Length: 137
Length: 198
Ligand SMILES: [Zn+2]
Image (cartoon, rainbow over the protein chains, first blue to last red):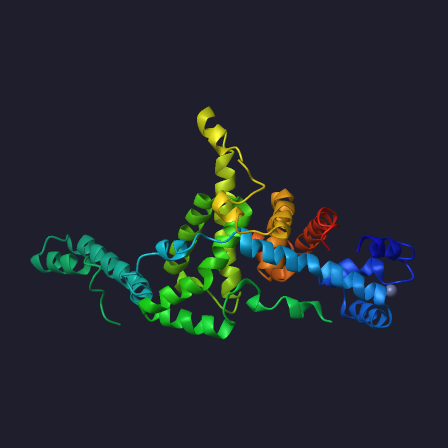
C-alpha cells in the first residue's frame, strides 16, 4: 500500500485526486460526483484512492462498534422502569387544563361581584377548583 | 458508486424508520412492551455514541439513562415531520454529553474533584474490553480519541451514526456548513493517523 500511495501522489491534478476526499464524504455536487465516478471507471489509481478513503469510514465504524461496546447485559440493567401514566392521558389533561383555569377565574370574578359569601358561590368555587374534574366541553 | 449507499439507516444498528414509527405509536398508546422494544432498538447506539464522546463507562451509562428517561417522558413532543427519531434521540444524548463534559471543568469543583475529573487513560477503553479489540481496532480507536471533541463528535455522528450534514448540524446546533468543514478536518486527521492501515 505504501508504495502505491507514493505513486499516486505524482500526478494528482490530472487524476481526480483533489476531489476524492470530498467525494467520499458526500460533499460534492451531483455534477462533480459524476465527474469523479466516470474518471474512476477508467482509472485504477483513483479507484484505489477512493477505496482507501472509504476504508477510513469503515474502520472508524468497526472500532466504535467494538471499543465502545457496553458490558454484556448492562443495557438491559439500565433500561428505564416502565412508564406509569400513558402519555395520551397526560395530553388530554393538558388540553383540559386551560378550561379548568377559566372556570376558577370565572368563579372568582362571580364571587367578587356578588360580594361572594353566599352558600352556592362557595360550593361552586369548591368544585371548580378541583382540577381532576374539568368541566366537560 | 454513490457514497450514500454506505451510509444507510442500518449503519448504527437501528431499525428501519417505519418500524420505529410503529413502535412510537404503540408507546403513545400506552403499551409498555413498545417502550422496551424502542429502548432495545436504540440503547446500544446511544451508549456507544456517549461512550465515544466521553470515554467513561459511568458517564456513558448516565447519559444513556437520562436520555431515555427524557425521551420517553417527552415522546408526545417528538414530531416526525421535523426530524428522524434517531436524530431527535441523538440530539438529546449529545446535549447530555456536552453537559457532562462542561460540568467536569467547572471552576467550582474542589481540587480533589478536579483531580478525579482529569481525563484518565483516555486513549483506551476499560481493561476488560481492551482485550477484545484486535490491534487494528485499537489503533483506530486511539486515532478517534485523539481527535478534538468537536471533530470527534462530528466524525462519530457521520461514520457511526450515519447522519447527513444537515442532521449533524441539527444534533449539534451548528450550521450544516460548519458540520461539513469539521468533517473534512476530522477525516484528514484520521487519514494521517491511519496512513499505515489503509
Ligand atoms: Zn485517476
